[in-house]
Image (cartoon, rainbow, N blue to C red; front, side, top):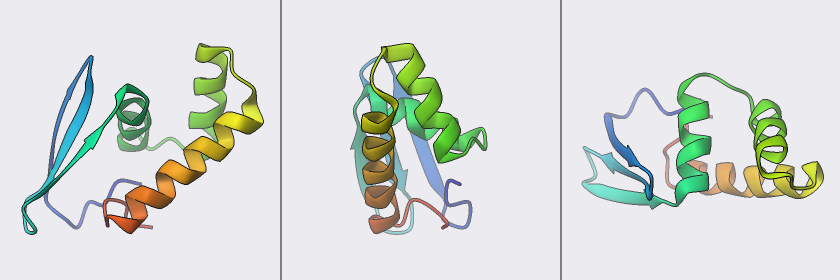
Length: 84
């Protein structure tokens, strides 16, 4: 789940997304795949659902996509953009 305790502002377009953490003044940029995952998290989707949908839409191997999604989520947590 996207960190709702921290005031975040997000701008999303076809090139990806920019997430502004208001209190720290930091901006995290996301590529289009990162923006796809970010939007899915905002809708409350699980990592498993996100990976399955992304694998299906991109015709990639599910296990590869699952590892990529997990790595991306770990980075979001490291930057304190995810609540848990």
